[in-house]
Image (cartoon, rainbow, N blue to C red):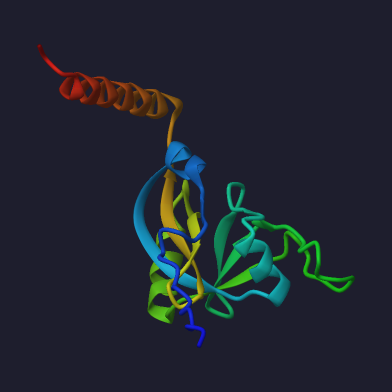
Length: 165
């Protein structure tokens, strides 16, 4: 008699995580929020294949409908999807509580503040979540300071890990 093999569930560490590394370079991130995203079927398959880019994207608050919208993020067309598919750079609705949306709307009224997508990933239940944050633009001297601090931290870490004879 043949034994049945049980399917192993994937860890969150094994799923693909699309990260906006540029956000931490260009912005000071103060608040973070995990929210859902409204997608079509072929968009989910493209994200699962890792065919999405959130680097140029940002989020806005629609005051009339009181909803967050993800703008300028590209999710490529699914190659096996057929002729009727989604637009790669369409505006997508983010799913959050009205209280959180109101908080973010109040914060983005300040000059130089924007809502930046930080990461897009699958949860253990198979849902797609997007992490957004409140970003305040960095000046060029702030970026240089961050690079200098990162290099100093790396050199200290290397010095601590060396074996002393």
